[in-house]
Length: 139
Image (cartoon, rainbow, N blue to C red; front, side):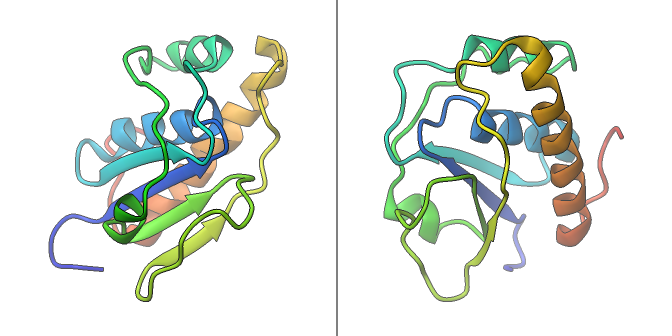
């Protein structure tokens, strides 16, 4: 990692649920100490409204976010790339750390099914912050 603030990119297929929740948590819990990106290999038209609802329950508003297409530039500019079920579509660059988080897909699920996915993402984001040496602003 560089001497500047660390950066993380969360990637899933539609960039509408898991990656958006992870990005929301990392922005919130890092207090701006980490540069956060998210993208998808086949971005959806909008963020999953149930993912938005689940995050609002945590006091994190991701309503203004929009699904974005994955670019090689976004991958290359990130210290850590976390994939969530996007397979082999992510370009690989030397010096970039890659992780794959096996998480259930919230697409088409109700709030009761999405809450445990959200909570697992929160735990993984807290672990990522610890690995990056960034103290969470709220736990």
